[in-house]
Amino acid sequence: MPTTYESYEKVGICMTNLSDPFKYSFDRLEDVADHISEVLQCPITIEDVNHKLLAYSTHSDCTDPARTSTIIGRRVPEKVINKLWKDGTIPALHKTDQPIRVKEIDEVGLSNRVAISIWKNNQVLGFIWALEIQKTLSDDDLLTLQMAAKAVRNKLLNLQIRKTKNEERSQEFFWKMLTGHIHEESEMAEGFHKLGMAVPPVFSVMIIRLQSEMTEKKERQLQYLQETTQQVHVLLATADYNELIILTAPKNDQPFKDLKQFAFRIQKQLTDRYKLEDASIAFGGIYESISNVYRSYQEALAVLKAKERFVRETKHLFSFSELGIYQYLDVLDEKRKHTGYFNYSLAKLEQYDQEHQSNLVETLERFIDADSNVNTAAKALNIHVNTLNYRLKRISQIAEFDLKNINEKFTMYLDIKLRNTHL
Image 1 (cartoon, rainbow, N blue to C red):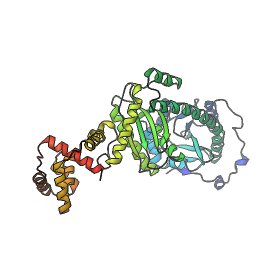
Image 2 (cartoon, rainbow, N blue to C red):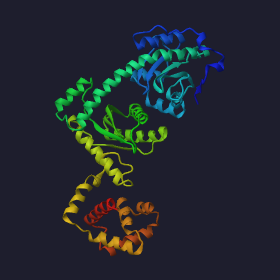
Image 3 (cartoon, rainbow, N blue to C red):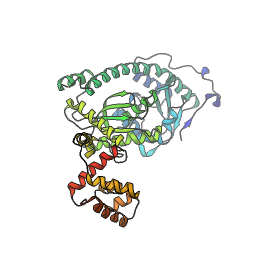
Image 4 (cartoon, rainbow, N blue to C red):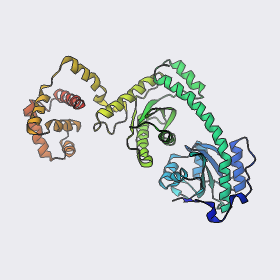
C-alpha cells in the first residue's frame, strides 16, 4: 500500500517557514518540470488526470523503464496504471492532496517514487511524479512538492480550458456524423482535418450505456477508462443522457478482436474500480469508409436493443456481427403480425406445458441454444442427459416435430425467440 502523508504537522514542519521556490511563473510546463527537478534533485513527470504525459524534466539521466515508456508513448502504459490501481495508489491520489510514497514494482519497471495530485476545488486535474532513484525525498522535499502542485495547477487549468473548447468542436462534428447530417466522405475528411486529426482507415462506433442518467462523476470515470484502456484509439467521444458514444480505431490488424477486448476491459474495470455493474456495451460494424459512421452507430444501437430484449442469450455479446438471428427478429416479428402466421408445433408444446406444468419449450430452446449438444444443454438445464433425451423424444411426439430437420428446427427456434419477446 502507498504511504500517505495526511498532515505535515505530524512531522513538526510548518509550511509557512519554507520559502516558495515556485513563486516566479514559467511560460512553458516543460520549464516548470525542469525547475521542480532542479529544486528536488530528482526526475519529474507531470500528467493529466487520464495519465497522458504533459511534461517531464529533461536534464536528468536517471530514470526507470516505466518513465521511459511513458515518455516514448506520451502516456503511462496501461499495465502500470492497472498495477497502481490494484495496489491502491491511484485511488489514494483521487482522495488526498498530500504526497504519496510508492514503493518499487519490478514487474512493471517502476522504481521508488513520490506522487501528488493537482487539485482545483474537488476535482483532480493531474499528477506530479518524483523518482527516488538517487535520493529519498525528505520531509522538507515533500512540502516543496506540495508547493509545486499548487504552482502547476494554473497551468493545467489553462490546458483544461483549451481542451474543453476543442472537445466542444469535436463533439459537434461527431454528432453531425452520428445523426447523418454529414454523410459525404469529403466533408467528413475536412472535419477531421480541422480538428488536426487523420481520417481513420478502419473504425467502429461504440456505445457504453448506463441504466441511470450520466452524472458528471460517472462521465469523468468513463472518459478516464476509455482514455487509459489502450487497446484501441479513441478518436471522438460524446455523452448523451446515459450513454458515452465513442469513435474507435483499432490499433492492430485484428480489429474485431481489439474492439471486443476493449469492451470487455471497460466493463470489467467499471465493475472492479467504480462498482458500476449496470453498464451495457456494444459496437457496430467495422468499416473502412468514414461515410459509414451513421450506419455503425445504428448497428451499435441495435445491439443494445437486442441485449435488453434477450438478456440471457446476449449477455456475452458486444458486436453487431455477433448478433446472428437477433439482427432480424424485429423484421420477422412485423411479418408474423401482418400475415397472422401460426406455428402449430410450438402451440402444441405450449399447451402441453400449461396443462402439465412442464417446461418442454424451454428444454427445446436450450437444446438448440447449445447447438443440439445434449451434454451442454443438460448442464444448462441442470438435468441428467438421460432426462434430456427423454424430454426431446416427448417433444418430437407432442409437437410432431423432427429434431433432425434443420429447417423445422431453425423455424421453431426463431418462433420461440419471438414468443419470448411478448411474454
